[in-house]
Structures are given as structure tokens and as C-alpha cells.
Length: 489
Image (cartoon, rainbow, N blue to C red; front, side):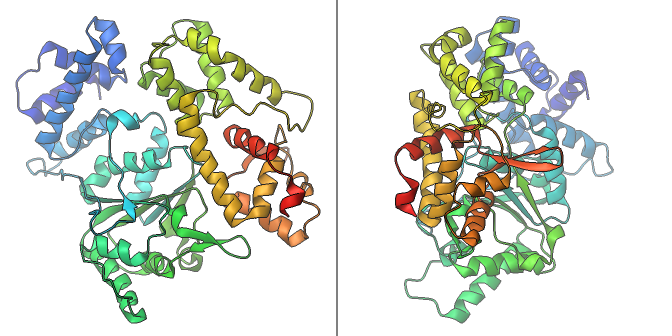
């Protein structure tokens, strides 16, 4: 669909004969993938004016269609509208408003909610993944599990999927639940969704079972999309390193959700840890696990562009590419860096930012190609060479390592000792680091790192090699300085 065709559809939706000139410019250029800053520069308008015009357009569309439209999803919305307009049901309204129904705080003190904020999300890339996952959710997949290290974009992807018109049409209501560290019970979770007051007295076992059934019945009769964020907070580690739910009723709920017929609702779960097997693996086609990795180079450059940071020279483009490579396309870290570049004192001056921090990047690059396989003296500033990186990135990785240390000390020691590896090595090399421990304990520790998605994998000549993500390695090296493994084991 061309921008002119899309413009005609827009005017048809809004029931106006003609948009003004600036509205046309913003719409057509946004359709071509241009950011507000690029549009402002190209047509010599003030950035704020262009951004406000865009916001007004998306609000007009939202009002006309009865669903949330943003710069992130307006193309999908327009194409979806055009497709249905051509069908025999063109005269009917095929759109439903995707209400985001957060849990009421008075009924759920252990939960918080995610907000859908275009300015914060600034979604870029992964379009083929969005299409594939949307197709899964619209098909027989009932439970989509988005997993990966902290800051890799799990929550953003879940929110992005909830905005897809195809999903919004069939599941117009979206419930968003973010578990925190207060160990919420299934009772609070279920009663909050069912809008029932949580009882103060202890539920009898048969009443708890009934609560599972009641919630399943609700999801059967009220088709919705249920987003459960930070599910790792309701998990605990078993003796063999496997994860299970702190409250067994969660396991019963997921098992029944997978098994029962029919089930029009869908679940999207995000977690830093591998989730327990549902229904003993008997319905594998009804669930899908997606392990998120970093953005590819082009997507990462697009992320900088979404923050109005553009390279003006080949040299500046190379600086951005080097930053992207060192951070392995980690969305949160790159978003923080892009935000720093955009604001004072750098004011989008990539050269000035590199002058201050380029040495840190160059040091990491040299370490990655060094001939020595191991080093405990490598730079540890990748996640905290600036204030924002410390506050927004390092603190989240620290929480991940703290969780690991509390639940599996040997795995924590293995992670810290493994941070001395500068490149990926075979599994046996990792196990040698804790060779003094019993063989079974070694295996469990290694598998624990795998279950928490803390080990990146590389395939070479028919063999698998393991390493830490550069950000995880940076923090783990700092931890290594502060303890002696032999005193912990």
C-alpha cells in the first residue's frame, strides 16, 4: 500500500474531505518510517509542532475507530481497516477498543500494572517476529512465553503484541499484571481478575480449587488477552535446579488453561527464568517459548533514530555501530545511551559523546579480541560508566545476580568465575571452574544458568560453546572481585 492510498483511507476513516498540508506530510512521512525529528528537519518545521500534529492524528484515529492507535501501530490499523472494508462486511464496524484493564490496587496490593506509553516504548524492529507471534496467538497457541535476560525487551514486545489489530479485534480486553517481589498468592491474583474481595481467613483446599475453576470459566466466557509480566517473581528453585511455582495453584491454573476446551483467551508471560513445563508437556503445540536476544545492527540504529540521534558522517555511524556491537544490541542499554546522547550536554552530538566514553568501548573491544582466553582484570564499567547506565541498567542486572545468589549459590559462583572467559568455551570448560564440587552439583549449577537464560550460545563446527552476555559479564566481574569462591562453597 502506497502512502497516497493510505492517506485516502485515513480521510475516509476520519470522514473529512481533506487534511491540512502539515497533517498530510506527517502521515505520509511516518508511513515511510520517518521519525518526527527527520520530518521536522526535512520540511523545516519545529520538532514539537510535528510531534503534536502526529499525536493529534493518532488521537483522531483512535476516536474514529474505537481502539488505541499510535505511531507504533497505525500502519497495521490502516491495512487492517482496508482489508475489511473490501470484504462483504464493509458496512459493519470490525474494530473493538482494546481496553487495558489494570487490576485494582485496592484488591491486589501485590501487583502493579504496565502502561502502554508510546514515548517510552519507542518500538523498533522485530517486525517479522511480531508477525510470527501474532499468527501463533491467533492460532492454537494459548500460552506465549517471552524469556531472556533483564532489559532485553520482553515487556515491550508483550505490549507491542497487545496493540496488533488482529489480536485487538478478537480479544478486545487486555488485562496486564506485573508481579513484584512480595510473593503474591494465586488467590489475590484470581480474585482481582474476578473482581472479588480477597477473604482475610485462610481458604480451605476445596475452595482454592474452586477459585482455579472459576477463573478458567471466566476466561472461557470473557475472551481476553492476559499479560503476566515478571513471572520469575512467583517461581522458586527445586533441589535439582528446576523451577516451580511458589503457590502450586498457579501450576494448576496453567495446566487447566492449556487442557480445557474451548479456550478463547490467550496468555502472554514474560520471565527471566525458564517456566515450568505445563501439563507435563502433553500439549506442546498450545504453548510457545520465545528466547529474545538483542536487536540486530540495523534495528539498533533505528532505535537511536527513534530517540532523534542520527549519524551525520560515516565516522559517527561507525561509533554507533561499535557501541551496538559491544552491547550486543541490548535494547535497554542502547535506549539509555541514546537518551544520554539526545539530552544536554551532548544534544545529539555523537562525536562529543564518543569523546567522553569512547575509550570505554574501545577497551572492551580490545578485550574481546585479546589472545588470552581468561582474565579477571578486564574492564567492569560497561554497565555503569555513566550515571544513567548505573541507575537504569546496572541495578537491574544486580537484582538478577542477587536472585541467583540467594537461590543457587554454586550457580552464582560458576557465573562469576565464568565471567573470566573472554570468549565462548565448551561446557566442559565451564564445569572445570567448579571441579571441586560433586559432579551432580556441577551439572545442576550449569543447568541453572541455562534455565535463567544467563548463558549465550555460539555454534562452531558442530559444537556448542557458551559465554556470558557482555553486560552480565561486566557485573559478574565486579562480583568476582568481592568474594573468594572457596569461602562460599
